[in-house]
Length: 405
Image (cartoon, rainbow, N blue to C red; front, top):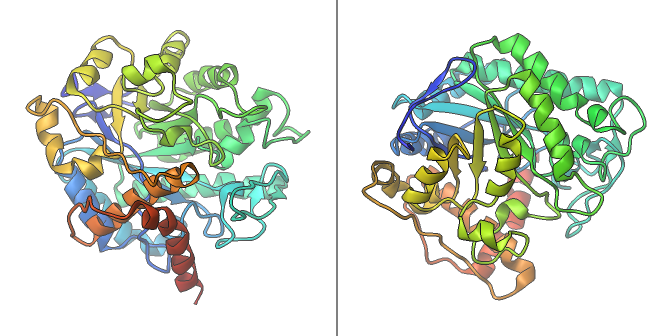
């Protein structure tokens, strides 16, 4: 099953069911443009034969970065570089989609001290995030235009689809959550109002890119926080997305405050034991989605064995299998994995021995590997976990300062 084609509602065809899910590259130049490293990364990933490659966060606003190394699709002048990136990523007949996002209150202080957000609900994590400013109608209008422009530039550059990031606590996720959206206007309150921005963006992008261009959405199953976006609300949003006839729905979960999307099989307390044994973190929620929607379904997180991937595909539990870290630690193995010649991909675990540093160590380790790959270097397994835990903050600061000066 994993090697079979999938025809999407818009008519586009993915050559197989394996997806390289989004992982932030962090390597743009000081003008927020892609560099040769993007081409090198995506050429190598295209060689894995995965049917779909989804880019790391492509932002719509230079003041609201997910990382200081993000590419920002906001200027026609960068089209030649965007075209080179797109061409590199689709060289083997696979798709390459851009993941477009706005970080909202999850923009760190290196980007802005007063990020825009649905409401003035501050993210309190390590002192890295300023108090947000509640968006007015003009701000919301600009965000809609920004998403549409990014999608248009992506299509003009030759990317073959877009994924709208409405998960992981970024801006669209913030609008969906009653914990971060306490507005009383048409953009807040009921789940219908909180979904309005996401649905408006989808509709405006569809008008711009046409009926035959894939549009995907990444959505949280839940925020895993008291007073946050719940499974019940997520299912209501899924029903709305079903009406919009998007092409792929990717299920994930969590925010910067609760990193459910970053858990390991062996360690994550939030992940049910039954789910851990079955590899995929969000497979139980996928069954609930299947009961109410016919959207092509992608799940990322935990997949490691060939037999299990084929089992969930054959059973119709998902239509696409997403992987992130294996495209770093097992990049050379993936072509043989797709053929069934390699049955299992290793799950590399990095531990500092200090609980409060574990997430940062994982993030730093994989970020460093992507930067190495972009320079043509090989995987380096032997890295200090403690140094990795500090890497992202140091790197963000240096990258941000280099762009300012």
